[in-house]
Each structure stands twice: as C-alpha cells, then as structure tokens.
Length: 153
Length: 302
Ligand SMILES: [Zn+2]
Image 1 (cartoon, protein in one colour):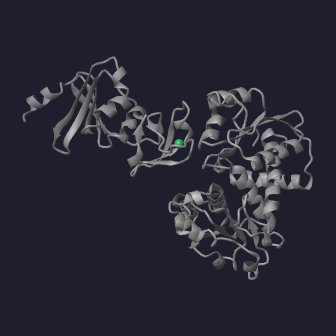
Image 2 (tube, rainbow over the protein chains, first blue to last red):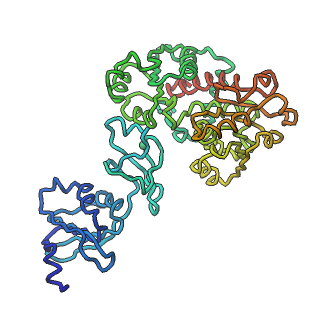
Image 3 (cartoon, rainbow over the protein chains, first blue to last red):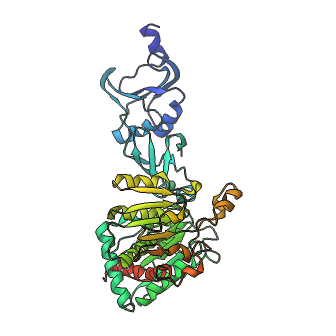
C-alpha cells in the first residue's frame, strides 16, 4: 500500500495528538478512558488496520487536544504498546511511549466482590505495585487486582 | 498520634506501636484514669461482634468517656438504605472518635476519608483488625519480656485468619522466626510470606502441631472453620489434628505461652486452661488496656 492510500484510511490532522499502535479492538476502551466521547474537537479513529509491527492495530487522532502525562498514561492498562505523537502544523513535534502510572484513579473496578467500592458510590483508587505484570493494590480493601481481572468502570 | 485514624497496621510506625504498648502497660497498672470525661466515643457495629465491642466500650468507660452507637444495623437508618458516607458524616458531627466494624473490606478506610474525626477500625471484613494485632503484640511482649528474636508458631487456619496475617506482618519488624502449622488447604498465603521474605526472615511449614512444641516461644492457635473446606471429608480428616491438649505440653520451653484470638471451639482443650502456658484469657483482658491506650493517644491526652 502506498503512502497516499494509507493516509486516506485515517485523515491527517493539523494540530493535536495521534495515539498509534493501540492493540486491535481496544480502541473503544481507549476512547472511554480518555473520555473522548465528550471531547468538543474532531476525533478520528480506525481499528483493525494493518500494522507492520503488530499485524492489526488501532489508531486515534484527536484535533487540538494535548494530553498531560498522568491523563494519557491511564491508557497503558489497555494499550501498553501505544505510541503518542504530538502533531503541530501537520508535522510530528514529539513522539513518546505510554508508561504505566503509579496510581490508577477511577477507571478500574476492584476485583474483590466484598470491597466497599463495589457497594457504595466511591471512586476507586489503586497503587500499581507491579508495572510489568500489572498488579494493582486497592487503596480501600488492600486486595490485589491482577492483569487478567482488570475490568473498567 | 493525636487525631490520627488507625485503619491498617501499616498506618502507624514501629515507634508508634511501641509507644501504644508502653501506654497500655500504664493502664494495666492503673486502669481507671478519667482522662476522657468530656469525650464522646461512637461505636458503630455494622455487623455484630460482642467481644470486640465490649472491649472497646469497657476501655472508653474506664477513661470516663460517654459511649453512643449501635451493635448491629437492624434498628438503624442503614437498614433503610442510608449510605455509609452519610452515616459517618452524621456521627462525626456528634462524636469525638469513631470506632467501627463493618462487613465490607475497605469500609473503615473510606469512613476515615469522609469523617471529620479520627476513625479506629475494629474490623473491616476479611481485611484488617489492627487493635487485635496490637493486643497480640502487647501480650507477646508481656510474656516474653521482649518482642525481638522470638520463635512464633501459628497453628490452624493460616489462609483466612486475618489476625494471623496482620501479626505475621507486624512481627516482621522484630526479627521473628515463623513456624507455620496448618493443613495443606489452609497454608499462609503468598502475600503474607512475601513480607517475611522482604524482611529477610525465615519461615518453616509443618502439618504436625507436635513438631513445633519443643522450641516455640509463642504458640498462636486459631480456629479451623468447616465452611473453609470445599470437601467436607477433608475437614473431618484435619479437624482433630490441630487440637492442643495438656499432655502435649510436657516438653515445651518454660517461657512458652499459648495465645488465641478467641472464641475457641475445641482447638485448645479445657484441660490446658489451668496450665502455666495458657494465656488466652489474659490476652483478651489486655485488649482493654491496649484500646484505652489507643483512645487516649488519639484524643491527645497521653
Ligand atoms: Zn478494593
């Protein structure tokens, strides 16, 4: 596929952020985590696109929106391979990888059914105790939610 | 420690624990000190626990404080669907200290975040029960004259017993050696063993209670509950193998003491009660002094 055709799949943006190399089928999770449903700017996305590195991938382009690291790192839970590209005047101004943050606020449900956060209206809060294997310790019940058990609120 | 909440044993430093134990020793010598005459202590028991509630209320009364609260939620607005947050905000407008027990894990932490007064966790589901841990430490120090370098045997249900998990974690600060006696199904979870490893200490696992009696300084007995077993036959097999009786104590160390968080069912036979090793009733009594110390320290009067 030549360059022109590839760009047709998801239109280029003038200013904003491109989130590339999202694992296929996790694009909608990323959109939810970043609350892009309520973003007032143009949001373009594609899923199950061909990728040299990963076979299939997803991509999101958000115009005129720039994320602070804390905000963007939340997506590391569903898209650990994601690359962030900051676009200014159609050009790449910055490129970086997402990183698992130290704290996860609000977005993940506690795995422990007996945890108070599953019974009262409480925002969840976790400390990441293992970034590689993704283990989250609940601030309230102190139990550990592991990678396989992560469910988003 | 003034105005501090105690939710989890990790909330206080080792020095703060020692300080609480020292204050508790003072209350043991002189229990009736009316230091909290102008204080109201609320005891909110969202699930019943008569033993713990009586211990806290006795402690508050010996300090001269007034006690308000409930012993179960049957006749309260919680039954009508009031949120924990609303209950706690309301009570923190009435009382100076809240003592609470709740069936959900994390409830006490949440309460401490919405309350304007300090909260003492008297048990939150299977999670924490820090005052039990403090009274266990107090009792160990009282019987051995020290907390350091002891051989501590834990016996019975080491998997689900939260008192065991907390005490293991606390004793990791004092160079203990851990002897873990349990059926295969009820071994100490890896999350607790992790604390032992991180402290560079040793633990040994056994299935026979008799094996640890000759060298233990403390034998901490726990109850094995039938409902913990998937297979009732497995329960029948082990239920009588972790029972301590008088005849087993002939070769124990002279300083050895037997502790138990109570209530016991049959795991310590009654013929042990009048041996010099039996210390579990004194341990329960110590709970009052430790809770007096904690209330006084949090109120800032000690
Ligand atoms: Zn939790």
